[in-house]
Image (cartoon, rainbow, N blue to C red; front, side, top):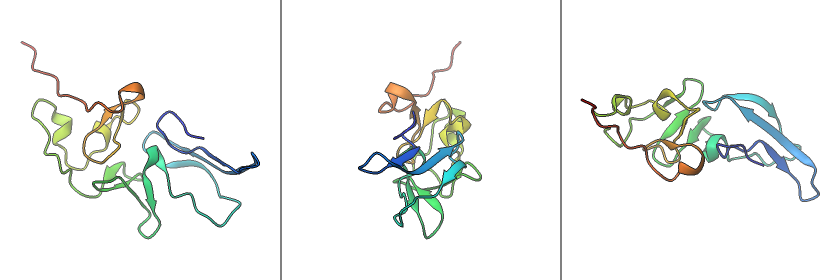
Length: 127
């Protein structure tokens, strides 16, 4: 079972029994983490990111994410746009607004909900 951001919240066996439960805050910090009853760890974590057991970080296709500081550990491969100042911060996650945006690949945040496949376009300067 997944939440609205595609974060796994419960793992269920083929018999319908709950194997593990997970709940995170808006930036991916574990709030509830009931460990699995099996020896197989859940490698899919916050918004579908892959958990790297060796580093404790979340792998997000283009770079790694550290939920404790709500930042990526490598610079953004996309250099951003002066029309969207939040995009110029090279380590920021979801423009510091993880309740509105989701970053599925570590490159560019998208709108949550049905707009997940559409990158956020910078707003033009209004005169």
